[in-house]
Image (cartoon, rainbow over all chains, first blue to last red; front, side):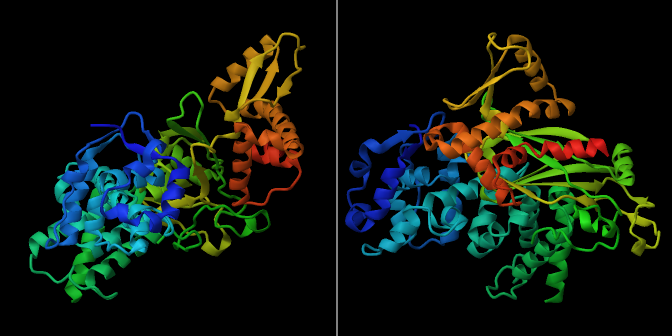
Amino acid sequence: MTEIPIISQNMLSSLYTNVEVNKNSYFRNGLEKIIGDSLRKLHNTTIKQNLSVDLRWNAHALAGELDAVNSRILYSSLEGMTPYQARDERILAAITHLYAREYTVQRHKIEENDTDKIKRHFFARGNGSRSIERDNSIGRLWWNGYLISRCKEGEDFDELLSILCTDTDFRAQLIERPSASTIPQAALAILICKKNFQTQEPHNEFFKGRGSEAPFRRWFRKINLYGGAKLFASMEYAELYKLFWDAMIEINDRE
Amino acid sequence: MKYDHNKSYGYPILRPVLDDVINESDYVGYSFEPSFNPMVLPKNPKKLCIEVETYLQEPTLKIAVIEKRAKIKLIVACRETFFTKSFDIGVDMDTVELQAEDVHGRVELTLFVIAQEDFQLSSDKFHPDFDDEAFNIIKGNILAQSLTQEIYMQKEFFRNARSIISISANDSLSDGEYVVSLDSDYIEISMNSALNAKINGLLETNANEPIEALNSIFVPAVTHALHELNSREVLEEYKWAQVLKMQLETIKNQQPIRDEVYNQAQTLFKKPLSKIAEISE
């Protein structure tokens, strides 16, 4: 165990500006020497030193399933990091460069001349909130874990992570709807609705479509509409679960 | 989708209204304009404290809250950290605390009054368009909603204007006199020991009245600080200067502020003069 690293803003800017110059280092010998003395540590935090070994990649596995596994590994490997810190590009970029270089290259299938992809997945800028929650290879895993840790109540952490991550389209629909995803009891109600529906109807088509009229997308739109009229934040989990479940059944019955 | 502020619910909702249309509001002559005062105290920087003054004056809803048929709820929401939390607020004012590290960047504060049980809502304050009707309210219905106030949580910049003022003793000063020094990270106000003890006593109370009394010191001190800041660029390196600038920028995103430093200082302290106007009414 060691403390979570943070690089200086000057070093961060320098790395971003010099991706083209340093690109070979992303695939071969790493960037530890370049980062060198600009590294500091965050007090009262720890990171597993063998994180880079623990994170998994497998060209044949589904990306969403690997995201679920790696979100658990990553989230449990970083202790003491606060949400405030997890929005800091200096920290996310430091971890990505020093502890997740090979994982990032493999997970995002970055080819040697693709400096745009290096910038997108090793850094966290240029795309608003999405840069941290979707693009940075470490940020996206940490925020998956954090979202589940905030809402899980008595449910199983790994199982909820799997529900969230396995279907990347479902994850995007949930994460990008703050009226539900930022309210723990609303996020949990959505995840448990999906779990129970899959259990009741394991061969359903509800979550399979990808077009805008796919049933689960219409379900999310309906939840969004409810959020315009009801104050989810003041409602209990059970109330929200019933509201969302009824909407799900109604849409499914119309199919 | 966000809660729609202008949406009609088929029953009256107490909302903020402009003075010139207050007689067109759902509750004629009444508005809902709470005051939010967020601060991170230097002595406990891990906590974000939010003082809420509800200014809930419409009698029907105030009584509903007192009789526990309705509750006042503060919703604190931060999209960047997937944070939303609901806090119960007392009928007149309250202070809530949250972990400062749970939020980052833009944080939204909104006050609601929510029905806690089913009941009939009737009031002689309803706009005539409601035909003196009584409405069947069910648990969870929204009865009042404020505008959303945005604050910005950045460790280096976010401080409540009052939190960058320090008060110290200087017994060479007569009772009622004070001196303001700007050459450190805090706006240092010194006064004699007796007055200093009284001020510290007022700072430690949670009551409403002392805030106005303290503003009689804070507002002129900050007016002086802003005036000096405009003429001495070197002051920008101090924490107090950065904080005041950030606070004013934040407020300017929500409402216009006049250019005069005395008006800017008043705005930083929630316009104490307008509270005097309320008292005189």
